Image 1: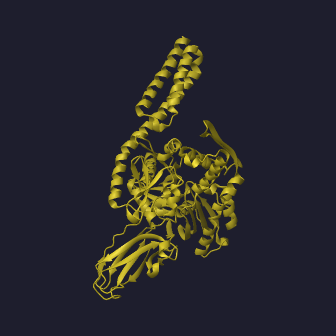
Image 2: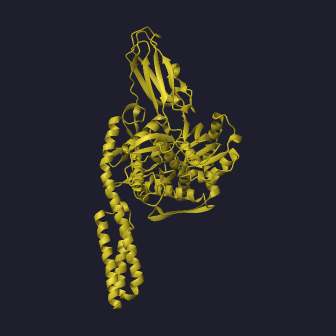
Image 3: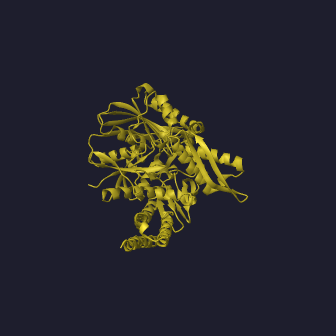
Length: 609
């Protein structure tokens, strides 16, 4: 039986794991890292790059470098968050589709990509990393999502997996996955909190662990609160100061803006360890023909003052989670922190203060979600028998009633899978059709919640109003994905309803994207060949430089200088952005370096003789 992998598809970084026997292996990528940047880039030749290579070239190519796409997936253009994202990213976000179903697309050159397609490129890279490690094809996965993702976002994530060539067995809530990773292999009888503050989202879940049972008691969060917002707070401070000092608004310079954002992220990370850090950005702008630099010291206390309000935004969710679980902070035995932002000392201090408990530091916050996903994959694959997971739905499911009121039918924190039935009838004599508007959310008015679908149910028997009996059945599966079916009880005829979640792709769209992804795999394979050749050439360069250092005393000054000059030329070429190098040129460089190493040895041997 083939392996099922677990993928943490993150806003900032992604991670892939797999069960090997009774152990979980977090898989290392080609760069030697256990996490991969969730970044996709394109160049003018139409080539695409994913992960570290995409991140390296971002400053030079910001408009065609796509990051934080997870914040767009499953959304519509009307979402306020999408409009906010448009003002923060260097790439172009444009509408896709028509009418009320317009979704955000990312324009690169003359092509528009959906967030699902970009996410699929990241998932494809994670699948390839797993295949290189396992030495076999991988076509099944468990993919994690924020607990507060609605149905559209979950459907879109599953679609991204399909485009990437994966059968997504389960869409698993990230805090739930983290609890699996935390509790696996241990005999625990605990009630734990998983506080998950990642790159783009925040979740809080309360779980009861014991005898292999993982029972989610409550979960909720904010799908638009994470490390990106901490970065943006630093960026806006630096831009404001730069404008005050130089009367230059860096918002108008995309390249400079990206450099500032990159520096802000680095400063944030360094201040989790150090008390202060230096931000140095030379030649950031030009004024009257003179280069202007940005240089300042930033302290941890300054960062904490700047972002304290973001940390405080998580506390009401913690309070509500305890209330939903009918618990108090005294009932919690462990607090497990997940997500890169949980490394921030202020976050740890505030969470520890709220729950009056020391923070558990036994897990790696960047990897634990992927670890849990692979454990769930092992359960679904039949490799693990002793683990039982009971998750909940984070959002209420209901319908719009008279006066635009939202009537929940499945309340949030209901254990899943679950279902509910509601009987409807007509309001007009001889009515042939009824409208059903399905929503998710917690607000009292329908317009304030997330619309999943509007159904027009035709073929009703021609009866007086109130006589037809229409039973509508709502179901939420183990992945938190919603489906709806209906039956007209008077006649016993089943009515078929076509459901299309808002923000989703049609089946034709998905099939076309799958075909395009398959075609792209050959180009990706060629790119990997080029990267391997670059690495081989760098190895030959190192050997040639070492030979020159060891045997240089046997060479004439003229020969040594000529060889040194040629080696420096090759080094300068290989140190360039790998996305700009051509395979044939790299191969020629390899041949030249091999000949150079041989030449050094021959000249030195002749001199020694």
